[in-house]
Length: 361
Image (cartoon, rainbow, N blue to C red; front, side, top):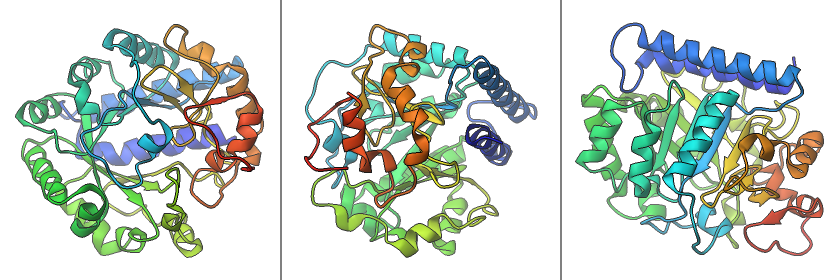
């Protein structure tokens, strides 16, 4: 079995487990079966494309805006994509999302910045048929209208916390942890699904990966937990990178299998998949301005979807080159092998969203 097929099968196993808690915005006993059937059909589309020599990722990560109402310490989005500039309008984003579903993408992750600053786009994205739509939000803009949107649609809010309340306050600000839990409680009361996202650093990883803490998240009613390994994109934050023992604990086989919710690790276990899953092997990143990038943690691009299609971008020289040499991009210090090899990527003729440091291999 090749690595892409393995990723597909693990993704399907994740959906089998997660959908036991119900389908957001859907009623009736057959909703979970229909959602799982959609994911299987999308996987068949991807496998058919692969047999024809085309690459389609299971996951599209769309950062729909650079804007954010917070200024979290070490934010990789602001570090990698500084400044402001034109963003794709709702119509163009929707055209690309519809193309992604037609190609065989099963998951469109809506991120930012703060995606709730693009409320009209989220409302339109909720109409996409079948696709799983997690929305990564800091939770501070979740008002009554947003709660209603999440409760009645298949959009799944994924609230960002940093572990315990004091960890969240230290990075994001006081009161934010409590606000997130309050919103989650309302959604649980409405029978709506939600997830939580935790950026693992050397400071919080031990407590955040502990059994008591993870079980407490299940007690809140979370359907999915994203564990995101910190990538030191912001200068002077190398001390936040996971230590060797922490990385080993994160990669321990079966560590999260018997939890009541699904667990997704990002950027991904390169060792398990024989190299990096970026550039379409597992996922692809669509930036707010339309740049099509190999990975949200490594903002390298040689194409834009502002005027071209996703299919064309997936077949660009840069994406092909990264996929052809994916085995060279195995697990390294700092979570993202592609970011750690950014000098090599730049040598392929890629453009980065900010100047690269000299001397990086």
